[in-house]
Image 1: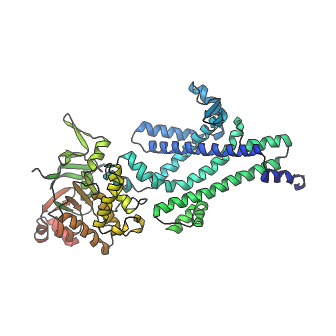
Image 2 (image 1 turned 90 degrees about the vertical axis):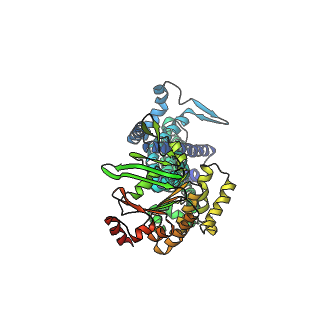
Image 3 (image 1 turned 45 degrees about the vertical axis):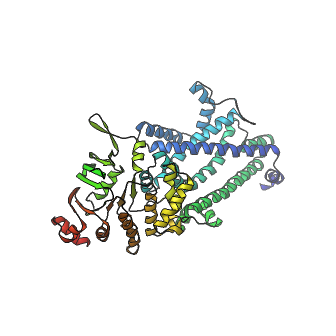
Length: 263
Length: 254
């Protein structure tokens, strides 16, 4: 069976991908980054709404999470890209969006929005757990110094919660990098679309899908290292001491055991 | 009296069906140090938390420097004040917590200068100069760049006192400031507090440290079951407490 695989094509896809593939890879990365940023912002907002005294805000936050965690991401992507303009009665998703030198296709804009909104629903629980993990005395101390809720959140609680939020956030971004492949279905030319089109032209599934899987693995692995660096910095500023790179790396692979050993 | 800093009138507080404060009235004058003693569950911590509105009072009123705390008069009713003006009132009421509550992601100095910069709008240079001076005063001039996690409990509590002083409050509330400390370091915290008391800081201290009360307090207040049952000078409490409940309590802690 293996004999039927053209290993030269696999090698080319892995080691010498063409220019078009790199454009697709770049697109995968920036779509994931922007969508994750949107997700974090929405997640923080939804978490604060969830903890608000105002019942309507809590309700809105609850409905948001209920819908976006309760329906398939693929359905949400189609709904946002094809349905949002019709539903809202105005153009939320333009045919193309020009930002300075960059021009984004409407499908990319819609895809980023859908991924970001979906991600926000998951981030809400992560952010909330992070905030909940901070001792109530921190908010009380801040308030007793005359700080208002917003300032105390921003300066005292959220920076501490960030340390708790970062490890699961890293896992979320790992998922995000892979979930961008779904945008192929609405016509975004990202990494998976490049592989799929290569496959349909050549009928060499193993060669093309193995090649693209390799590159997803490269992206998620690079991200693991970046995350290790971020966490190391956070821990250093938190405790005023440096943890070794490998201790941090261990924390990324296995947060629970690293946390135990740090106690 | 014009020099009353804190006045509590018939303060009531309930948590659900449990009435924790059943009408507490107390005046504290400028430069006075008042120790509040009493068994746990007597409401003493709840009472001082009402003074800076960390707990809302359900009845009665508390004023600090003549200002009603947490509420404003609307017709003949009291309505809760805006978050903004409550925050402003708290700037003149310092608080030192049992568990320190230092900000662990900030150094000792950053803990001290955070609120003066962000709340009072001081310049970083000004706040830093004052912060270093205060940390030196509590004996931690060499620990300005140390994170709380690297400080002992006694050192953390002294940073917390400096943090409180940096706001130049009219009054500082101490909520069992030495209860979470190892016995061998309570002395260093109490020494700082005694010095403050002698320098004329207005202080309300919930504590079981009768030694501190004897050295530093102008007045001792005994609370039990949500009311003040006895008050007087420290000598009064050591020599001839009147209430049976007070005698019992003192015999246990002395």
